[in-house]
Image (cartoon, rainbow, N blue to C red):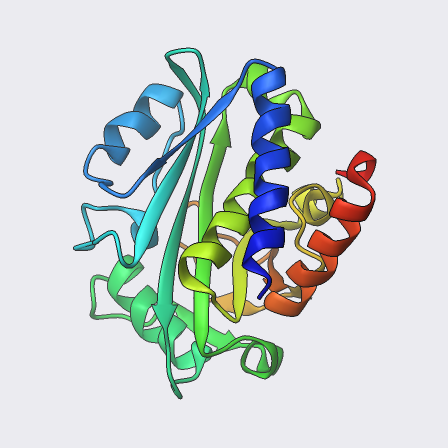
Amino acid sequence: MRKFDYARLLHLCLSELQSKGYDVEVLDDVSNIPEIIATLGKPYLTPKLSPQFNDFTSEDTFWMLLKNGEQTVGAAGCRFENLGTRKLSDHWKSSLKRQYGEGEREVVEWVSPQVDEVLGGRLAYYGDLFFTPEAGRSRRILRLFVLTGHLWTFLKWNPDSIYAFVREKDLSRGANYYYNFPRFIPSPQRWVKPAPEPREDSEYVVMLSNTDLDALVEMYLASPERL
């Protein structure tokens, strides 16, 4: 990992956001996140990133807020998990059973073998990305904000990969491109019917490995106009 190059690109992202009137705040204390999310108008907070379901520390989670002056207009959470030799499929089944099945009933009936083939070890989960309608109209702002999150995640934890869930309808609109997730797995898991709200079987897993990010950083520093 070329930390200085990551820092250079992070500076470019933040500088452009600031030129458009935005700033980014990183929160290590996430206790107020439910209230912040509610104020933004997001109808839910996923259990995996909710402080109501987890005892988080600054070592395993952070949230990023997009600010326009004093107003918060966007947010996203990130959680670090070092699985060691444990398969991600096993981790998903047990954690989702606890988060959505009250620890008693299975909620996932199948996980794609591709998941364990490409994701494992030191992982960062990215989720609950949400913007107000005004901020969300600019794909450029979304792109810079999410890339800022990727860079800070790798500087903070140096994971093997970042992954997230994206709905098929959003992927068809280019979400993986705008969010800089160059790889994806269709139908990574199948939920026991009915799927718990707001999850659905049309989700894809999108991912960004450390080598993927190295290539993106090199490209963007050489050609900043492609940011």
